[in-house]
Length: 100
Image (cartoon, rainbow, N blue to C red; front, side):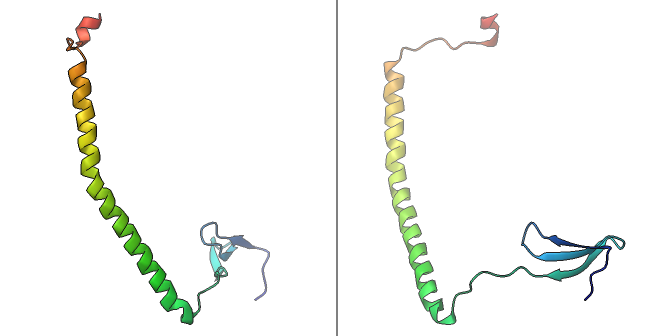
């Protein structure tokens, strides 16, 4: 197709596609899709699915361990805060009009 003087070829900033815009019409006249990256072969699909499943299982196990240790960490933090509160002397809280 012959390109007119009123047409501009613009690359899409999001997907990298090429758009041809007619200035007089104020609209996109044609669109050329961006070249895609390398696609995996169908023979590799089984291996890719196994890797993704192993990754999901590892993340799940990691979250289970983190959840089990979460209670211990919270109880340790509580014990430390309680000990610090007992060691500090009790003071009268400041009020807004005490600062004037």
